[in-house]
Length: 385
Ligand SMILES: Cc1cc2nc3c(=O)[nH]c(=O)nc-3n(C[C@H](O)[C@H](O)[C@H](O)COP(=O)(O)OP(=O)(O)OC[C@H]3O[C@@H](n4cnc5c(N)ncnc54)[C@H](O)[C@@H]3O)c2cc1C
Image 1 (cartoon, rainbow, N blue to C red):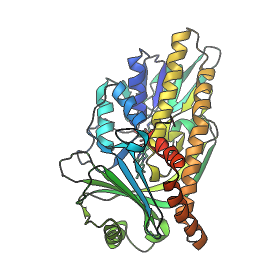
Image 2: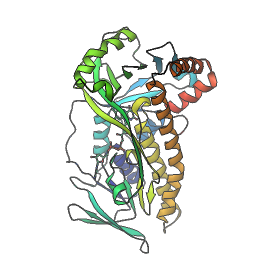
Image 3: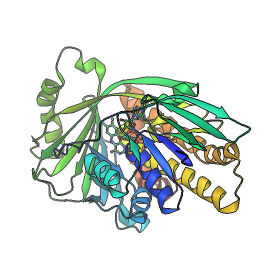
């Protein structure tokens, strides 16, 4: 088997890359660690796509239910600072689109006949620089000869380990909690984000679903607050605070999922013809819902570079092709990572002066048209991130 690209990881980003390359007649195979199984019908986890990611999906024919967000209200639960973003301010119909994770993953998986080796993983990559390809050994003992190896295998990338790439990793000392809920709100297109000592609480509208839940909640909590209590008890004991802030009852109607939060970033995304993409290369705090959008921007840049190399020449310099991808993506991702770290530290601080400054800062940005537009354009994906 001699595909042009071998993709480690059949998640959202791995499957997207495979579909996009297929539409451009470039053959790929996916090596996926887990079983080939239909994802659970219980939709709990969500993703917030920006308009750039949504366009990439539209372009390859992916259609799934979504809930548009037209306005976002951000406020400091422990102070008075607030900021309000509206799609009208950037002449767009919507700011972002909430989708169910399982819907998107399943649709991408089903859409093209991806050639996927399930319950398998890459054990070794032997690069032959003279012959311009790599030989890949799988745990099933199959071998693949390939031009590019794309690591799309998430936060603990196996490909990154085999390629011995250097990682910088740090814990946020926080846990993200997510569940679906029903609540009565006047505006179906409005999302709220509250920064408080009880955590960073985001509540966003949901696409139509069997359970008729109306909202998704992504709530990041300091691990210190969870030392003497279970996650379920923490949620039940503290949700009233946010009900009061939002003047609505919130009825939890799904299981409560939780994820340990850390950030990581690789110093280099490439080694020879091996490349890291999406969460394999970087992961960030979910507070701005940008994780998957960075992954889509990576995937788009990588596909563009591979497709353009194939259009231009029969003899491809893989390292040069991948270097162009790395130059386009690494600094943009690092900037987003650092910005998220700044916000997490700013809102995690108990220092009185920092609290005062962030209240003044939020309200100040709200009044400054230029800064506001800058933030909204980035969040909505109008400036390519
Ligand atoms: C609580 C929470 C909320 C989030 N909310 C948002 C949001 O609102 N908006 C947003 O943009 N992002 C959000 N994110 C981030 C987002 O979920 C990730 O950025 C995204 O899922 C990354 O996609 P990926 O395909 O790169 O990696 P993954 O989704 O991690 O997929 C990796 C794939 O590789 C497979 N794999 C793993 N190891 C191997 C191996 N050794 N060999 C072969 N295959 C392997 C896995 O089984 C999986 O299929 C959130 C994250 C969390 C934790």
